[in-house]
Amino acid sequence: MIQRIQSIFMFLLALINIILIISIDSDPPSSIPESYFGYYRIYITDYFFSEIISFIVLINLFLFKHSKVQIIILRILFLTMIFGLINLFDERSLETSLSDLGLIYFIISFVLIIMSIRSIKKDQAIISSSNRLR
Image 1 (tube, rainbow, N blue to C red):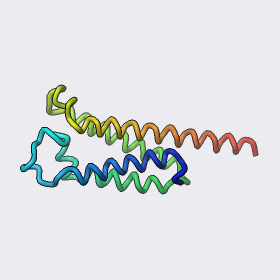
Image 2: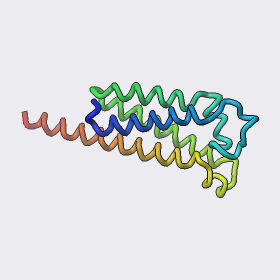
Image 3: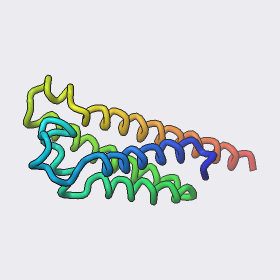
Image 4: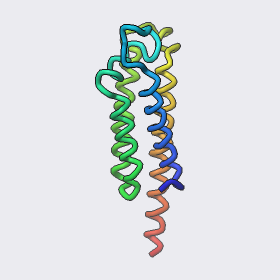
């Protein structure tokens, strides 16, 4: 399981979300709303967004025998991240949104999800080609 590169990508995605959970404090009024994801912060702290994503990615890590399910879960996470990115740019100016730390989180998450999906598809291609040889 760990020798598969997509497992490492998914573990990094879960690790980033765990770091996000630790780094964002749970008291929004005492902190600056323009930093740490700005207006998107409400969704992260109130709806346990990072905790849920971390949990789903860790479960997805252990579904290595069900690659189609892994791809479906990663695509759902990708769509969720798109919603988060749209929400990040929604109520603020473009300049403020581009300088926010949340943009870096979304870029890294998108890259890791896309790389995981590509790696899983490569594994599926190798498995299907070996099945044709039998």
